[in-house]
Length: 122
Image (cartoon, rainbow, N blue to C red; front, side, top):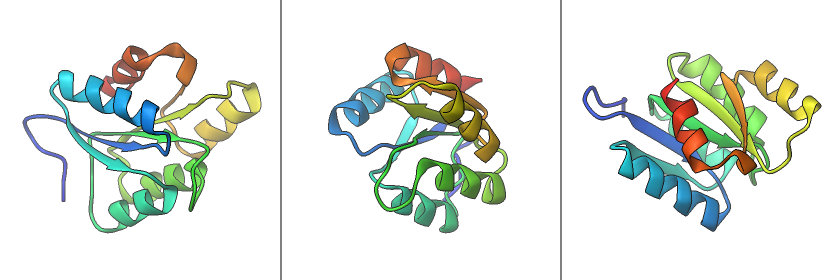
């Protein structure tokens, strides 16, 4: 599966139901096509299967494989995907590690859903 040429596609990699629902609602409202993965291993399987979304919102603390693993997978397989790392924790080491793993940007979850959508747009 490849990113659509008209509407943009976003992969939401999030294991928290409330956060996933908020992101899903915001991205659909902004006209994006949304694909969701509830674990790092599910996200990696989607990328290895050919998914090339316009953007990926990647929680760092995930079951199956870490968000860092997912970010590295995107760098290798889909460098055109804009990857945004998100976490409820906001410290300098986490931000630096996210950027080193391939995130274009780190957005703390406390910044709000609108900030995440804005970061995905670039």
